[in-house]
Length: 105
Image (tube, rainbow, N blue to C red):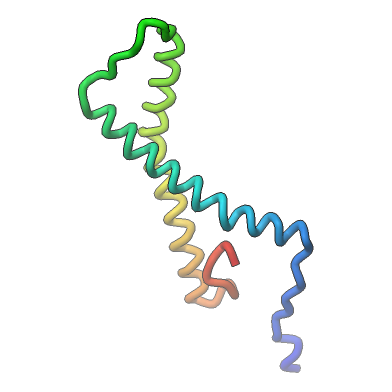
């Protein structure tokens, strides 16, 4: 009867191992890049306006600046959701709802 309560772990397929490796390496890299861009663009928005060269089109400048502004406004929410999900997952592990303490395992 003890065997029925044992949790069996199946071996990962080659595709699953590849996906896991990519996520384990690329997601932290992308998060680091987003943190860097957020810090840089937030600081740029707090200082004096940036001077652009005359050959840049006005609409292209406006689109890029609007995209940066939206990213700076929305990134804290994405960051909060990411950190919150890590916290909730580890809390679920402490309460015994999951067998792994991290998403990447």
